[in-house]
Length: 429
Ligand SMILES: [Zn+2]
Image 1 (tube, rainbow, N blue to C red):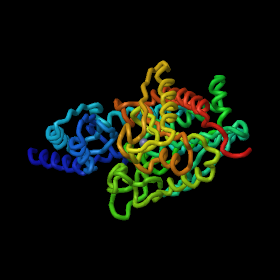
Image 2: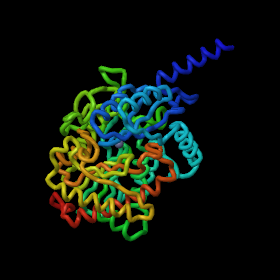
Image 3: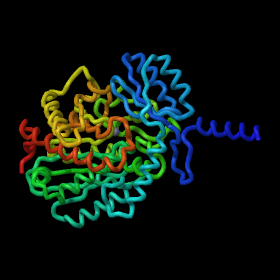
Image 4: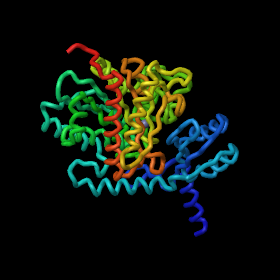
């Protein structure tokens, strides 16, 4: 018996060492994976910790800011992590003791609500979102119009919805779920669509009817389906690499705008922020570029939805040595969003700044590309709830409050844009 137990234990450890295990329904499990928040002061300390994330089996980067890292750690990686924390002399605080527990609760809530009509008490799958879009298009044939960005690596159609109540409106583009595991983004985008079409609140009516909305609820369709069916924690696209067994590219580092400059993305195909073999290597990002390029005259504002950390990030991401010409305006507009959200009953606090200034260099992202290459002068990455208590696995009970905050924030943002003269038409009617 002693022998059998030892053998089983050895096999179990071997299993953990090889990465997350696979459950009965072939979903990857994260039993006893924990997430730690690590605070550091020097670049040396950061680099020591950042190196851990190179070992994908045991460490996964969840969030990175200039003074803090959030790392997901396998139970097998804990001893090494503890040794590194001592060596780097930094403080580490656990905030998710067992990632699988959060995933289980979420899966449970999703399946309990799945008999309901499409709604925002659960996270919807791509098929459910697309069926709902079809329903919207059929119900509002005059106001709404479907558009297709293009086709993903795995052959899925990337769809969007345009909402326009009248001609001559300034255009707002919303890109959502470019990162697969950030489910709160498509939940929020679809909730906003529903508000723009059905709300009777006069403020929402004014907002909806005085702008043209181009909304892509799920840009990274392959990755999104993969998070629902296989690996809840997947971030990247699903195109295999020619030089590595690791799959996928960080699509938000793949735009052709200062691509890979200043260490703003990784050249390691296994890294979460792998920039790809070349700019626009990902068909989803090429498709986004082609489509936005074809309507850029109609767009005044670009908003890219992400989670988590409650931030508004303006250009530039590739450097903090330079700032955009209208940086003061970009900060005033971001402040309007933050103030409006904070004044809302939930009191949620958003910080803002340039992406490189407030976080770290990140090049080839949507907000920079839209600003630099498409002439869209108001361009942000918006990182939704929370600040790490649940991270990417934000419970469905947060969907509506988060979306309400986005609505109130976007209203204030566009009001400020109008005051500052950013919503003038860039084309002749
Ligand atoms: Zn993201």
